[in-house]
Amino acid sequence: MTDIAHTGTPLLYLGFSTLVVALLAVDFVLLRAQGSHRVSVREAALWSVVWVLAAGAFGGWFWWHLNGQYGADVANQKTLEYATGYLIEKGLAIENVFVWITIFSYFAIPAELQKRVLLWGVVGAIVMRAGLIYLGALLIQQFTWIFYVFGLFLVFTGIKMFLFTGKKSDLGTNPLLRWLRGHVPITQDLHGEKFSILENGKRILTPLALVLVLVEVSDVIFAVDSIPAIFAVTSDPFVVFTANTFAILGLRAMYFMLADMADRFQLLGYGLAVIVTLVGVKMLIMDFYKVPIVWMLGTVAVVLALSVVASLMTKNRNQGPGPQSA
Image (cartoon, rainbow, N blue to C red; front, side):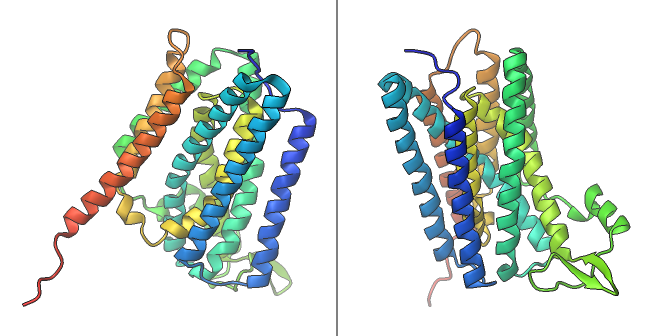
Protein backbone atom coordinates (compact mmCIF):
# COMPACT_ATOMS: atom_id res chain seq x y z
CA MET A 1 0.00 0.00 0.00
CA THR A 2 1.25 3.46 -0.84
CA ASP A 3 2.04 5.38 2.35
CA ILE A 4 0.30 8.75 2.15
CA ALA A 5 1.33 10.87 5.15
CA HIS A 6 -0.73 13.94 4.28
CA THR A 7 -4.05 13.68 2.49
CA GLY A 8 -5.05 17.28 3.11
CA THR A 9 -4.66 19.84 0.35
CA PRO A 10 -5.32 23.58 0.65
CA LEU A 11 -8.60 23.02 -1.20
CA LEU A 12 -9.66 20.23 1.17
CA TYR A 13 -8.85 22.32 4.24
CA LEU A 14 -10.75 25.27 2.79
CA GLY A 15 -13.74 23.12 1.87
CA PHE A 16 -13.89 21.43 5.27
CA SER A 17 -13.49 24.74 7.12
CA THR A 18 -16.32 26.20 5.04
CA LEU A 19 -18.49 23.21 5.94
CA VAL A 20 -17.78 23.69 9.66
CA VAL A 21 -18.54 27.41 9.47
CA ALA A 22 -21.83 26.64 7.68
CA LEU A 23 -22.81 24.06 10.33
CA LEU A 24 -22.02 26.49 13.14
CA ALA A 25 -23.95 29.25 11.36
CA VAL A 26 -27.01 26.99 11.24
CA ASP A 27 -26.56 26.37 14.96
CA PHE A 28 -26.42 30.13 15.68
CA VAL A 29 -29.48 30.79 13.53
CA LEU A 30 -31.43 28.10 15.34
CA LEU A 31 -30.27 29.46 18.69
CA ARG A 32 -31.54 32.93 17.78
CA ALA A 33 -34.83 31.56 16.45
CA GLN A 34 -35.50 29.34 19.46
CA GLY A 35 -34.26 31.78 22.06
CA SER A 36 -33.11 30.65 25.49
CA HIS A 37 -34.83 27.42 26.43
CA ARG A 38 -34.18 24.23 28.33
CA VAL A 39 -32.85 21.55 25.98
CA SER A 40 -34.73 18.30 26.56
CA VAL A 41 -33.03 14.91 26.50
CA ARG A 42 -35.09 14.06 23.40
CA GLU A 43 -33.87 17.17 21.55
CA ALA A 44 -30.27 16.50 22.64
CA ALA A 45 -30.52 12.86 21.52
CA LEU A 46 -31.85 13.94 18.13
CA TRP A 47 -29.00 16.39 17.63
CA SER A 48 -26.49 13.77 18.78
CA VAL A 49 -27.75 11.45 16.06
CA VAL A 50 -27.52 14.29 13.53
CA TRP A 51 -23.88 15.02 14.42
CA VAL A 52 -22.91 11.34 14.36
CA LEU A 53 -24.59 10.95 10.95
CA ALA A 54 -22.77 14.06 9.71
CA ALA A 55 -19.44 12.60 10.87
CA GLY A 56 -20.32 9.30 9.19
CA ALA A 57 -21.36 11.03 5.97
CA PHE A 58 -18.06 12.89 5.86
CA GLY A 59 -16.21 9.62 6.46
CA GLY A 60 -18.06 8.09 3.52
CA TRP A 61 -17.20 11.04 1.28
CA PHE A 62 -13.58 10.94 2.48
CA TRP A 63 -13.30 7.26 1.47
CA TRP A 64 -14.82 8.00 -1.94
CA HIS A 65 -12.43 10.91 -2.49
CA LEU A 66 -9.33 8.94 -1.47
CA ASN A 67 -10.41 5.90 -3.45
CA GLY A 68 -10.52 8.04 -6.58
CA GLN A 69 -7.18 9.73 -5.80
CA TYR A 70 -5.03 6.93 -4.38
CA GLY A 71 -6.94 3.67 -4.58
CA ALA A 72 -8.92 1.47 -2.20
CA ASP A 73 -5.99 0.51 0.10
CA VAL A 74 -5.23 4.10 1.04
CA ALA A 75 -8.95 4.95 1.27
CA ASN A 76 -9.59 2.02 3.63
CA GLN A 77 -6.58 2.81 5.84
CA LYS A 78 -7.26 6.55 6.15
CA THR A 79 -10.99 6.07 6.74
CA LEU A 80 -10.26 3.56 9.52
CA GLU A 81 -7.84 6.09 11.04
CA TYR A 82 -10.57 8.74 10.84
CA ALA A 83 -13.16 6.44 12.47
CA THR A 84 -10.77 5.37 15.25
CA GLY A 85 -9.67 8.94 15.93
CA TYR A 86 -13.28 10.10 16.02
CA LEU A 87 -14.24 7.36 18.49
CA ILE A 88 -11.28 8.12 20.76
CA GLU A 89 -12.03 11.86 20.73
CA LYS A 90 -15.74 11.22 21.31
CA GLY A 91 -14.97 9.01 24.28
CA LEU A 92 -12.47 11.40 25.86
CA ALA A 93 -14.91 14.27 25.32
CA ILE A 94 -17.21 12.65 27.88
CA GLU A 95 -14.73 13.56 30.61
CA ASN A 96 -14.91 17.15 29.38
CA VAL A 97 -18.71 17.02 29.61
CA PHE A 98 -18.52 15.92 33.25
CA VAL A 99 -16.34 18.94 34.03
CA TRP A 100 -18.88 21.22 32.31
CA ILE A 101 -21.61 19.75 34.49
CA THR A 102 -19.54 20.63 37.57
CA ILE A 103 -18.97 24.21 36.32
CA PHE A 104 -22.64 24.88 35.55
CA SER A 105 -23.72 23.36 38.87
CA TYR A 106 -21.22 25.44 40.85
CA PHE A 107 -22.46 28.70 39.31
CA ALA A 108 -26.12 27.55 39.39
CA ILE A 109 -26.57 28.44 35.72
CA PRO A 110 -30.17 27.74 34.62
CA ALA A 111 -30.52 25.08 31.93
CA GLU A 112 -32.04 27.57 29.48
CA LEU A 113 -28.86 29.72 29.55
CA GLN A 114 -26.39 26.90 29.08
CA LYS A 115 -26.95 26.41 25.35
CA ARG A 116 -25.41 29.73 24.29
CA VAL A 117 -22.38 29.26 26.53
CA LEU A 118 -21.70 25.83 25.07
CA LEU A 119 -22.15 27.00 21.48
CA TRP A 120 -19.48 29.66 21.94
CA GLY A 121 -17.44 27.09 23.85
CA VAL A 122 -17.53 24.77 20.85
CA VAL A 123 -16.43 27.59 18.51
CA GLY A 124 -13.49 28.42 20.77
CA ALA A 125 -12.59 24.75 21.15
CA ILE A 126 -12.42 24.21 17.39
CA VAL A 127 -10.18 27.25 16.88
CA MET A 128 -7.84 26.36 19.75
CA ARG A 129 -7.60 22.69 18.77
CA ALA A 130 -6.81 23.63 15.19
CA GLY A 131 -3.81 25.55 16.52
CA LEU A 132 -2.72 22.67 18.76
CA ILE A 133 -3.08 20.16 15.91
CA TYR A 134 -0.92 22.35 13.68
CA LEU A 135 1.69 22.58 16.45
CA GLY A 136 1.58 18.83 17.03
CA ALA A 137 1.99 18.07 13.32
CA LEU A 138 4.90 20.52 13.13
CA LEU A 139 6.64 18.90 16.11
CA ILE A 140 6.18 15.41 14.66
CA GLN A 141 7.58 16.53 11.31
CA GLN A 142 10.65 18.12 12.90
CA PHE A 143 11.28 15.70 15.78
CA THR A 144 10.30 12.05 15.31
CA TRP A 145 11.22 11.30 18.94
CA ILE A 146 8.25 13.44 20.03
CA PHE A 147 6.12 10.29 19.65
CA TYR A 148 7.88 8.84 22.69
CA VAL A 149 7.21 12.02 24.66
CA PHE A 150 3.53 11.83 23.67
CA GLY A 151 3.46 8.14 24.61
CA LEU A 152 4.96 8.67 28.07
CA PHE A 153 2.64 11.62 28.63
CA LEU A 154 -0.43 9.55 27.72
CA VAL A 155 0.60 6.64 29.96
CA PHE A 156 1.08 9.10 32.83
CA THR A 157 -2.26 10.75 32.03
CA GLY A 158 -4.04 7.38 31.91
CA ILE A 159 -2.68 6.39 35.31
CA LYS A 160 -3.66 9.78 36.73
CA MET A 161 -7.18 9.44 35.28
CA PHE A 162 -7.47 5.98 36.85
CA LEU A 163 -6.40 7.27 40.29
CA PHE A 164 -8.62 10.36 40.27
CA THR A 165 -11.78 8.97 38.65
CA GLY A 166 -14.76 9.44 40.96
CA LYS A 167 -13.08 12.05 43.14
CA LYS A 168 -14.91 15.37 43.49
CA SER A 169 -13.05 18.60 42.72
CA ASP A 170 -13.63 21.86 44.58
CA LEU A 171 -14.10 24.52 41.91
CA GLY A 172 -13.96 27.23 44.56
CA THR A 173 -10.21 26.64 44.95
CA ASN A 174 -9.53 26.96 41.22
CA PRO A 175 -6.65 29.48 40.92
CA LEU A 176 -7.92 30.98 37.64
CA LEU A 177 -11.38 31.55 39.09
CA ARG A 178 -9.93 33.13 42.22
CA TRP A 179 -7.69 35.42 40.13
CA LEU A 180 -10.57 36.53 37.91
CA ARG A 181 -12.77 37.29 40.91
CA GLY A 182 -9.98 39.34 42.46
CA HIS A 183 -8.96 41.34 39.36
CA VAL A 184 -11.98 41.57 37.03
CA PRO A 185 -15.24 43.43 37.80
CA ILE A 186 -18.06 40.87 37.81
CA THR A 187 -21.75 41.31 38.54
CA GLN A 188 -23.33 39.37 41.36
CA ASP A 189 -26.37 38.36 39.34
CA LEU A 190 -26.97 36.87 35.93
CA HIS A 191 -28.33 39.13 33.19
CA GLY A 192 -30.00 36.66 30.88
CA GLU A 193 -27.67 35.40 28.14
CA LYS A 194 -25.42 38.46 28.32
CA PHE A 195 -21.71 37.95 28.96
CA SER A 196 -21.23 41.60 29.96
CA ILE A 197 -23.26 44.70 30.75
CA LEU A 198 -22.68 48.45 30.95
CA GLU A 199 -22.89 49.76 34.50
CA ASN A 200 -22.13 53.42 35.25
CA GLY A 201 -20.37 53.67 31.90
CA LYS A 202 -18.11 50.68 32.60
CA ARG A 203 -18.16 47.26 30.95
CA ILE A 204 -18.66 44.58 33.59
CA LEU A 205 -18.63 40.83 33.08
CA THR A 206 -21.48 38.61 34.23
CA PRO A 207 -21.07 35.19 35.90
CA LEU A 208 -21.96 33.69 32.51
CA ALA A 209 -18.69 35.09 31.12
CA LEU A 210 -16.77 33.40 33.94
CA VAL A 211 -18.44 30.12 33.04
CA LEU A 212 -17.45 30.55 29.38
CA VAL A 213 -13.82 31.19 30.35
CA LEU A 214 -13.73 28.07 32.51
CA VAL A 215 -15.38 26.00 29.76
CA GLU A 216 -12.74 27.14 27.26
CA VAL A 217 -9.87 26.54 29.68
CA SER A 218 -11.16 23.06 30.51
CA ASP A 219 -11.19 22.22 26.81
CA VAL A 220 -7.59 23.35 26.39
CA ILE A 221 -6.60 21.08 29.28
CA PHE A 222 -8.42 18.10 27.80
CA ALA A 223 -7.09 18.87 24.30
CA VAL A 224 -3.54 18.51 25.64
CA ASP A 225 -4.48 14.90 26.49
CA SER A 226 -6.70 14.02 23.54
CA ILE A 227 -4.71 15.44 20.62
CA PRO A 228 -1.58 13.34 21.35
CA ALA A 229 -3.95 10.35 21.62
CA ILE A 230 -5.27 10.81 18.10
CA PHE A 231 -1.75 11.37 16.75
CA ALA A 232 -1.04 7.85 18.01
CA VAL A 233 -3.65 6.64 15.53
CA THR A 234 -2.54 8.74 12.55
CA SER A 235 0.09 11.34 11.78
CA ASP A 236 -2.06 12.78 8.98
CA PRO A 237 -3.01 16.31 10.16
CA PHE A 238 -6.13 16.41 7.98
CA VAL A 239 -7.48 13.19 9.50
CA VAL A 240 -6.66 14.49 12.99
CA PHE A 241 -8.35 17.83 12.31
CA THR A 242 -11.53 16.41 10.77
CA ALA A 243 -12.04 13.64 13.34
CA ASN A 244 -11.37 16.05 16.20
CA THR A 245 -13.67 18.72 14.81
CA PHE A 246 -16.63 16.40 14.30
CA ALA A 247 -16.20 15.05 17.83
CA ILE A 248 -16.24 18.63 19.17
CA LEU A 249 -19.28 19.63 17.09
CA GLY A 250 -21.35 16.99 18.84
CA LEU A 251 -20.17 17.91 22.33
CA ARG A 252 -23.01 20.30 23.14
CA ALA A 253 -25.69 17.73 22.32
CA MET A 254 -23.76 15.12 24.32
CA TYR A 255 -23.71 17.47 27.32
CA PHE A 256 -27.48 17.88 27.39
CA MET A 257 -27.92 14.12 27.02
CA LEU A 258 -25.65 13.35 29.97
CA ALA A 259 -26.38 16.34 32.22
CA ASP A 260 -29.19 14.63 34.10
CA MET A 261 -27.66 11.16 34.25
CA ALA A 262 -23.91 11.68 34.64
CA ASP A 263 -23.94 9.73 37.92
CA ARG A 264 -25.02 6.59 36.02
CA PHE A 265 -21.64 6.36 34.29
CA GLN A 266 -19.37 6.32 37.31
CA LEU A 267 -17.08 3.62 35.83
CA LEU A 268 -16.68 5.28 32.45
CA GLY A 269 -13.66 7.23 33.66
CA TYR A 270 -11.81 3.96 34.29
CA GLY A 271 -12.55 2.83 30.74
CA LEU A 272 -11.23 6.11 29.35
CA ALA A 273 -8.12 5.75 31.52
CA VAL A 274 -7.51 2.29 30.01
CA ILE A 275 -7.91 3.68 26.48
CA VAL A 276 -5.51 6.58 27.06
CA THR A 277 -2.94 4.23 28.63
CA LEU A 278 -3.19 1.73 25.75
CA VAL A 279 -2.80 4.53 23.20
CA GLY A 280 0.31 5.70 25.04
CA VAL A 281 1.74 2.17 25.04
CA LYS A 282 1.01 1.91 21.31
CA MET A 283 3.15 5.01 20.75
CA LEU A 284 5.99 3.67 22.88
CA ILE A 285 6.22 0.31 21.07
CA MET A 286 5.64 1.60 17.53
CA ASP A 287 9.25 0.88 16.50
CA PHE A 288 8.92 -2.75 17.61
CA TYR A 289 5.32 -3.52 16.74
CA LYS A 290 2.73 -1.56 14.81
CA VAL A 291 -0.72 -2.22 16.23
CA PRO A 292 -3.17 -2.71 13.33
CA ILE A 293 -5.65 0.14 13.12
CA VAL A 294 -8.56 -2.32 13.03
CA TRP A 295 -7.47 -3.76 16.37
CA MET A 296 -7.21 -0.28 17.83
CA LEU A 297 -10.69 0.65 16.62
CA GLY A 298 -12.15 -2.58 18.03
CA THR A 299 -10.36 -2.18 21.36
CA VAL A 300 -11.57 1.37 21.86
CA ALA A 301 -15.15 0.41 20.98
CA VAL A 302 -15.14 -2.65 23.28
CA VAL A 303 -13.61 -0.80 26.26
CA LEU A 304 -16.10 2.07 25.93
CA ALA A 305 -19.04 -0.37 25.64
CA LEU A 306 -17.90 -2.48 28.61
CA SER A 307 -17.36 0.55 30.87
CA VAL A 308 -20.84 1.89 30.02
CA VAL A 309 -22.52 -1.49 30.60
CA ALA A 310 -20.57 -2.04 33.84
CA SER A 311 -21.58 1.44 35.05
CA LEU A 312 -25.27 0.79 34.39
CA MET A 313 -25.15 -2.65 36.03
CA THR A 314 -23.32 -1.31 39.09
CA LYS A 315 -25.77 1.58 39.40
CA ASN A 316 -28.78 -0.75 39.25
CA ARG A 317 -27.21 -3.12 41.79
CA ASN A 318 -26.48 -0.27 44.21
CA GLN A 319 -30.04 0.98 43.92
CA GLY A 320 -31.37 -2.47 44.81
CA PRO A 321 -34.92 -3.66 44.18
CA GLY A 322 -37.74 -1.16 44.22
CA PRO A 323 -40.34 -0.98 47.01
CA GLN A 324 -42.43 -4.11 47.34
CA SER A 325 -46.19 -3.87 47.34
CA ALA A 326 -48.03 -5.30 50.31
